[in-house]
Length: 315
Image (cartoon, rainbow, N blue to C red; front, side, top):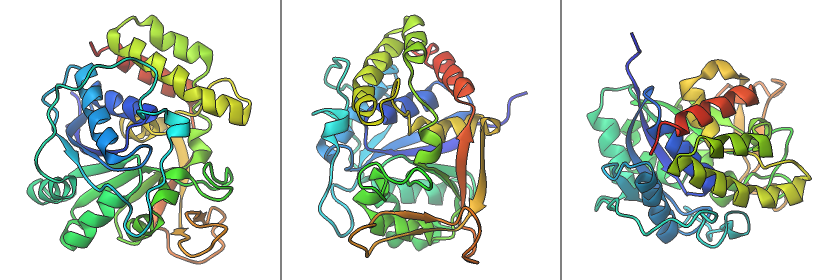
């Protein structure tokens, strides 16, 4: 008998790798996706909410509620990443305008109402973009912090450093103040930093295996990955690029494929050189209390096998 599906909200700024995270959740019986909240990040909000709805269409899930959230960081000007994700944020496949509707409610209100209405300790939030919506929800409704089961997020780096500055990973860099508030909120956090996502490489063999399943969704994903990886191949001299965001959903489905350790994580918000840096006490030298489970490694072949098998279940 299968365990009860895990209730999940994905908070996202799609992004090709975000798209794969959403599709993996939609294709997995272990996950009960309650809704998708969007935030400005990889591209501005007007595009991230459209992209999230296009992904629902692709999966044949026009019933999935999608909400638009924060269009800018808490205190800073928005930094985006069209140089990685393309002009639309979802460059690669030619996806039609979305049929999935955008809900009227603000993403932050949906998060608050969902956490309050579901039993305490039941709902996980997976933020795979800047943490602005999560910080705003915690500011507006501090009572939800104790009701959230866990936050499983993609962001930060330890030994891998950064990918938007030498010290900072993009999601944290865009809104470091939001990240600092979320990490200080006392919610159980599992963190997927660049250290693990850079081991989840979309090699040609892995992308070909996704395409070979032959479904409309799988072919679109292969096209997304081929577009997305060109930037990283040039930057890192690698075969393929790191598939960051699906690590969050995959960890919820198959935690045995990942390893890490409990650490203290603090977010730098002041320094000119290292703003957005996640200061991860991997070697436990600070004496500061643990506030996150930081993942450092994964079974990359198992990860891509899971994604390929699940994508094949979609239209």
